[in-house]
Amino acid sequence: MENQEKDIALIENYLAGKLTGEEANAFRQRLEEDGAFRALFEETKLLISGIQYSARKELLQGLRDLEATLPEVEVTKGFTLAPTWYYGIAAAVLMLVASVFLIPRFIKDSPEALYTAWYAPYPNIIAPITRGSEEEDAPSAGYRQYDLENYDAAIDAFKTTLDQGDDEYVLFYLAVACMSADRHDEAVIYFEQYLQQYTTLTNQAMWYQAMAYMKLKQVEKALPLLEKLVAGGSTYGEKAEKLIDQLE
Amino acid sequence: MVGTTLIEKLKNGEKQELNKVYVQYREEFIAWLYKSFSVPTDEAKDIYQFSILKFYENVVSGQLKTLSSSLKTYLFAIGKNKALEYNRNMAKKKGSAFDFYLHQLEDTGTAYKEEQLEAIDKGLDALGEPCSRLLKLYYYHKMNLENITKALGYKNYDTAKTQKHKCIQRLKKLSQEWLGKISVS
Image (cartoon, rainbow over all chains, first blue to last red):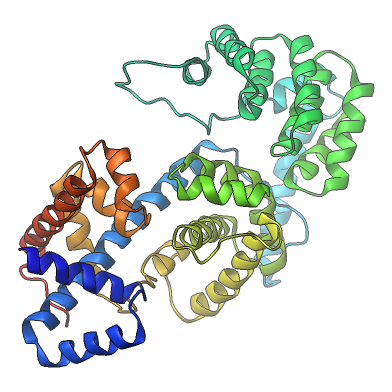
């Protein structure tokens, strides 16, 4: 068993390119001459590939699960498919449906009504609920309460976390939790703090801060944020452009 | 230096960092593939996931030690290549981007049949924890045995090393049960 363990380690080093030129040559010669070693080599290669395949599948599934929790990406501009006649008809039908059912619902709505139409809490991507953990620290408790939509409890836990030290994501989720708990005055302050200190979720923070201002009927403060998003050109920019149209 | 910190965290097994990266560039990336390469959004999501995966694999394999450009530029460069590759391949055959890329394993340089890889995947399921985790950490996430000892709570390095060998032997048997006999055709 010990010899085989050593041989497997040798094979791993060969596959990882860790052998010297001389060692690699000796390795290749042994492969040619030793049938049992060659079989072990092929078997080990296959097992490693299978393990990598399985782990890669697992990691991808994790990303897919995360993707499923995120809002749909809206893409509308600059897209060109083959210009066949049925795409034209489909587009016309969609526009008609939109004009009949959607546009009248939004046009000339108050900022508060638009807020209701557009607002959804940002999904928890940092610490999804896991069961069976015995001890829970403050940020985990916050994210769990956030997932359970107990926003006041989430706010308390997030504030406890921030009392112990800075945390970019906790600050962002604290602000969103405040919005969901109808504490928009606090939310705008936390978003301001986030935007001054951090950059990872800048677009998201600007978008939500603008929404909070709309809820507070401070459209004059929401508009510059939305315009910045439009200028940035991201998907949030496209959403912001639509929202500005509806606000005006 | 931000990139370096991220690379260190990923190498230390902090996989939640990958989720953060995923969310940070997701919308921009998908919209860009849609507009610039006419890749439908569902396929663009697959390509984005594989770009993230490729970035991760380059980090843990040590191919990517520091980012000379921004992380966004790096990811978009991978995405562009994958979108072009996807368009070329999808023009020739049916199938999702997910299926297309999943089988592109590069480490051993050998193309295996899907049923062989699936047999090992099932073998790993049957193997259970901590063996399955140990083997994935070592062979895919490229974590060294010292760190695996800590991560999985083994008594010491030698225990982890012995355990790794036992796990791979057990996996070999279990995979053979799924496939009949492992052999490279």
